[in-house]
Length: 136
Image 1 (cartoon, rainbow, N blue to C red):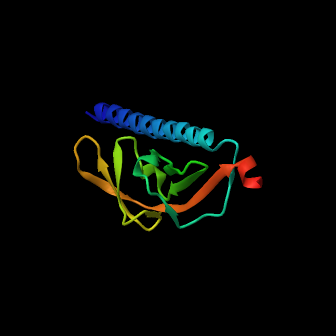
Image 2 (cartoon, one colour; image 1 turned 180 degrees about the vertical axis):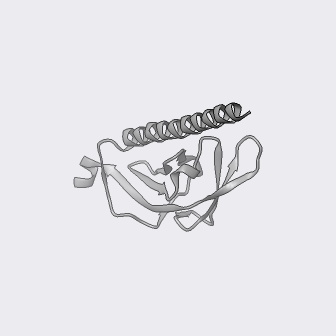
Image 3 (tube, one colour; image 1 turned 90 degrees about the vertical axis):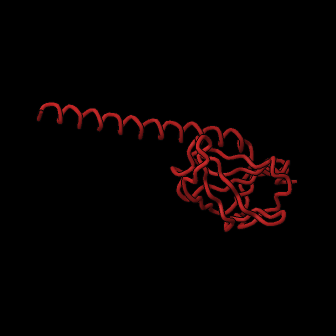
């Protein structure tokens, strides 16, 4: 029995380690995806609110944050706890009007069960503009 418990504990530890490694890999992959999106752009001053009239331009990058594509400018708001923004979570943003603000109430819902999985908090929105547009 003691040998069985030792093997079970070792197996559980390996499984938990694999899960953490997968999450790290997903986060690195999504950070690379964000880097591609803002490549060739220059970061501007962070803003607590942005005008985000078209909701279909809001993109969630799991394990990273929220991106809003305003055409010439891409706004990036990183999650304060990116590990809480998982692949299977759908963020529900309760906002009023055309502004998207870091203070907006954002809860996450499991895409398969529909149950609330947590709350999401964002940092300021950092605007990224094309380098030649920023200078001209």
